[in-house]
Image (cartoon, rainbow, N blue to C red; front, side, top):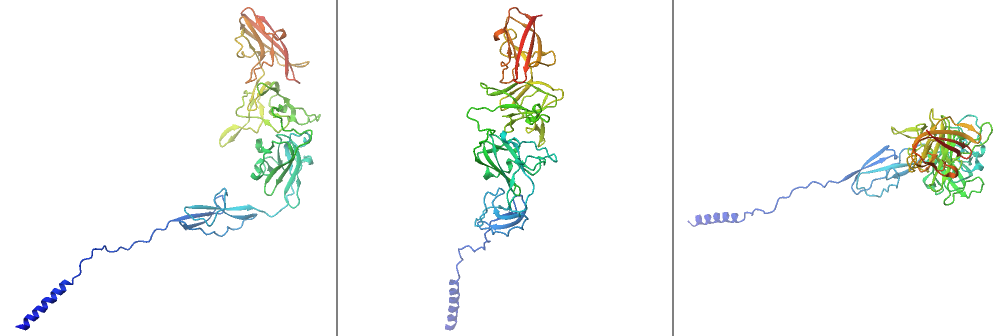
Length: 474
């Protein structure tokens, strides 16, 4: 009996001990395996030049540097000048820069050809505003066999294609450099666009048609480099020649005139070799404008305005000009739009021959056919011109000039009037007016209808009129 009890006790104890050793459940969350972080990357594109020729694409981690690639393949007559940040080559790219965005980098090339002597002749053409250098002008027609004055030729330097000339140029003188006799539209023309930015200065500016224009009279050295295609104008000192147009004094005005077929464009006459001056316009000091009373323009004649009988300062076709149908302003096509060709000349249309009035305020040119009108309280008021009088016969040559005869029948009331030249813009026309003896007004004492006759003579040398007005009742 004892053994049995003992054995039972032991068994029970073992079970109890095993039960007391059972582990408690864990309260912690099981661990989860995480993915590697995403690395941001950027695309770096290399272009051989600023014209968009693709060279290489590289992927770079954010904040890392891009390695400098090998230089592109060599180009004839060019040196590779490194990698730059934009198409304008504003700064060279720094390869120590951290890449933080997609980036484009551009190769730069420097023109550096092997020296090959340029055996062509270059000469100066233009209007230099220097009568002592009148052998230099715009008469480069391209005809073969023309012997241009050698004084217009530039001198070539030794061992380089640098050509130069020293010459005195007057205020607002303009010029280009070109190969004698070659057409104006060739690449062998040096103008304002060929002046490098570092060579621009206060003595020069861009003139019409991309000419180089002088704004400070003086002695200049004009240089062109035909290999690298650049031009330069350097002032060496004051101009001393008698024929040089010096800078105007404060308040001084230029002498503007009409030039064209009417005076052989200021060139010597083919038969007499005489040079006829431009038709000088009158200056109205109170109104700051110029006018010309009566210029005869034949059919087909071309013309424009210029200052001081030279090509330094010119004025021609403009969109703002006011001209009759008988005066043609040339046009050209620009991006599909028809615009005034400001580099051309005004032209008299077919059937448009006759005498014209000119008004010019340096911003626009106004032209109308020569005409005379009435003003006065007897004929409608002093405030504006009447309708033009009628030219009753063709102008005829007489002693002292050209005679014109005008007539008009008009209803009048008691009052006064005068006959005057028609107003044209700010030019009111009172510079040419006809009245009674002593310059007094004509007086109308009885209302009715009168016939007015004006007989006037134009002095071609002075652009002035003399004449007489008569009137009778009808």
